[in-house]
Length: 105
Image (cartoon, rainbow, N blue to C red; front, side, top):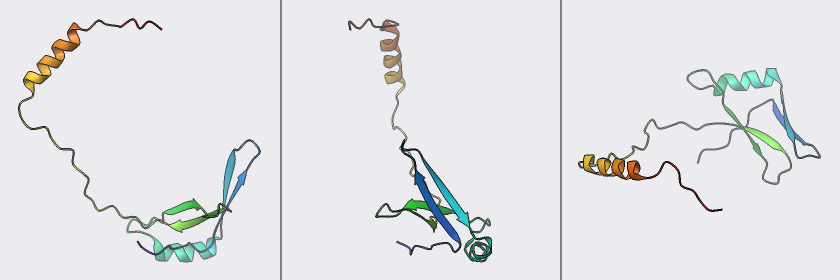
């Protein structure tokens, strides 16, 4: 697990209303954040931040999103064998079912 990197000049606050609606306010000190962001931008020039709740639920904080996909995705296994007969049987079963079923509720 990599170390948590907090952005300079970013301040988060959340206000929860009586009806449980909430708003999140983010204030950015451009001078401090710009200097920090220039050192933490990715290869495309983006700085990705994650806003999370503090463990004690007393507020919010922002941190640098350092996730990098590895470029490989899990492959869905392809079925093996000849399924043409199975598909034909399924089609026959579906065509023999009524268009609707009257459920006595």
